[in-house]
Image (cartoon, rainbow over the protein chains, first blue to last red):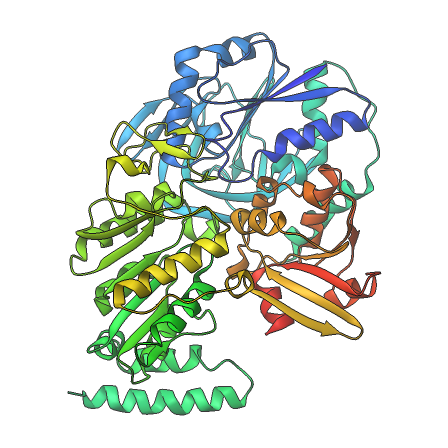
Length: 231
Length: 376
């Protein structure tokens, strides 16, 4: 049984990222993998044995609360040290970095990714398309943030921004290191990019999976890729 | 005293309104724009001498404004914006009418400056949840603006449903308030206290924070009302506003307060309902629907250009229905339903969708722009 943990959705659920868990479960089933979603609230302890952990986007105060709980308990750090997969979106991406700025205050993050986020001069809102050379697919999504995230030496960007802003610096979006992935893409990102969902499942299982066919998922993904190029 | 520039502006705006109607538009936006271009202070000038009532909130603004106008009309003529035109120019246009009262629907992000300009007698705040985040950015950002203006406007009475913690925070420092509670309800974005940023503790449908923000009626003067649907709550709030002004309460059907419209297409009777964000979809999906259900999704500016929120709505109540999806972003909705286990038929247009229905009566849940195109 593959265990997917949706962390603090009541806090990190502002931009629809809860859908990432549902898409993972759906894609897993298509490939014949049984899975379950655990919703872990701010008040609950986080399990450390799960396979995939998900963090979503949030407003400032909620982001700070979520980070304080994750720091207090330290379980997410233990889980990724054991090799669990972590996908962190937007506010989630910022809190797993080294530091980010909230208001005028520099906040120490979880330090799971070698990135630093500073406040940008304007809010970056709109459709975003990135070419992900490493995995040979294009990712589409929607961004809505004002952070500018600079990557350190230990991480690789997710891809080159073709449309939109992403990290807001150097024309790239996201960061990854091993099984830890951070990105600014909402949509939710796994709904709009089924290949990415499959990649996370493979990472969690540790081997190739036999992809199930889903015509509607493919149609949806290509619809956004084609629209993203044209308008 | 009428300022000459205002008189000229009003005259020009009136002709524009007439011309705009002739061209088949609602005639509310263009004249307001002209008016404000020529006389930027038109809203403040035209509001003078009127008792102004403003209505704002994420959902239910248009229908509640109509209800308040209907109630206040028992007391005298009412200047009002009927069609959901809720930005500055909509307000300016409505205020041109000569009347002792003005009842105006105001967009969430425009409320602060309209309060400052019109010095309203009453502001009715309905609810505040996620909507058009590409424009609002964050719910808290809107609540902060309201909080600042409510604190500032010391002559205005704020009537607010404090079961919504964002509204309770918005009026927390206001001088004149009438707090209403319907016995509590959960809030989709209510996990953090909007006042102090702590984790907000909910006991079923009641919240209370260590900073003092709560909807418990034992801790503060609150008008307690019966529980009910959003339509019921809005009708109750409208009547409370009427009561403050001295008007008799009126009875409203749920339909009057739900943005529902029935329209015939050939032999089919389609019942339309406006749905535009997680809260209004969730409310609409609670209602009873016919076996044939058409869902229409667009993602233009006023619909919200980001469709990610679809994943915050559970469509499971549509299981077993014949679901047909259309609209410019129908594909986003069809895939969201698919992952929840609901298979739909996906077509481009409403005209194609209605042909696929089997029964005579059809439920249609539709996004903002599509609603206006199909039923207005």
